[in-house]
Length: 552
Image (tube, rainbow, N blue to C red; front, side, top):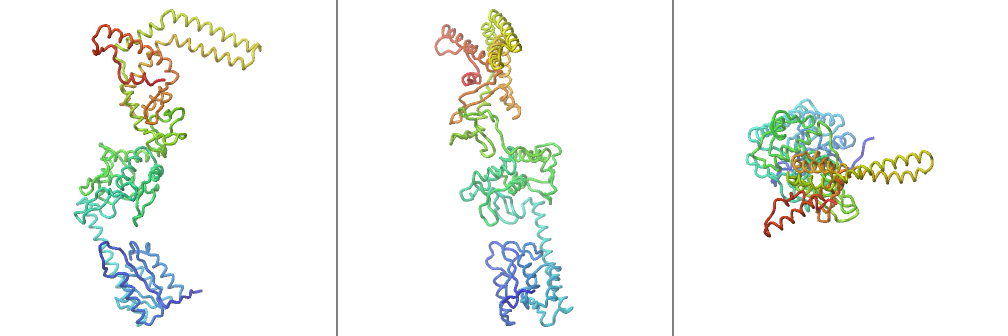
């Protein structure tokens, strides 16, 4: 059943593009509506239902962004309207096929087609061969000029990209355009978005976090948590999404000051890094991108290379974990509470049971590395430590340790026999076995003290000399092998360090030897030198002195 309306006919208005800075348009929506209503009054129409496609880009070459045009065609098919008035034919469409469809609708459903400017009125002669040919001819010219304009724009864009190295069209988030035409330049947009940081700062932060190992989702979450925003085409602040982050990361060459001089299908893109050079140089070569004098780089070449490396590794081996872990995760503590650091608190360790405790994780890592990098055992200090440990252990002490081990072995065997004979309970056996085992380990440690101290000196010496050269993974592995926990105060300063069990007793002997050497050397120094004169014999490296003070 056809719809009934109070309107006798329909009118259609289209504005294809809103041009900034133009106060008056040749065919403005107001002019179109005035012409349509005047024509309606001329034919004594009692009412005209208006269909309007006005906001944004409403190209007559397609129906994609013209919802009211689609509604108009459905209305002509289902209503009892008698006519359709358009100000000029190309407002309906700039496509021969679309105009042909409109003619068929009007013919089939008995609608009168009227244009104000072109003088078309099918009520005079109907849809004859001549009138249809005239309409199609006008549609052909409309499409011709549309295609010609498109070709000219494409040619201009190609010239700007390939020859002048000037970006064409919309620019990526974080930039602002200055100048026009051949004088156009793109510069970082430092204007804040409300209370949020500027687009340029947001883009830099986003790329830095992505390069550090976070996924698109994690970066979007952190940006939103820290009140970073972007704006839509209506200049309204919006929250970040995975797709928004991915779009910014995909424009890394642009942010590094490069322009791609040929068309590139992003969905078919696959990062290929061949030849020599940095990741940025190799990727730019693959993408046929060149440095543009019209683009002020928003990020450094190092950051751009890091982002490209991350994308390439994801492409080859999959994504990394959402959480970014630091050097001291999970051995960092605040008192008895373990500090946490993940993607929701990026850049900081925080305490779940103590509000307000936020420790800069990067600074904490850097401080520990700096101190450990200063550890060294000069030959004279190493020789003095060996002599002190050997004297402290002594042959008599070692003989006593051997006798104690033999006695403990006998007692442990007797304990096993008692259990097998049923003379003691399993609970009593476990308690006694634990006590004997602890005593046995302590006695055996006496025999290996010299070797253990030598091992801890070698470990610390190697760590001090190579920690600056290690990869982050190897550096973390070496530190966690030696340290069990690192405690901080509210200011983020290291207050205490606990060693692993294998290094604890050996380091105790090392610390005792260092104090003994220092005390003896200080006494000798005061006896043989004038006040204020420094002796080389009592000097220790800064890193070793710091470690001796902080190890529990």
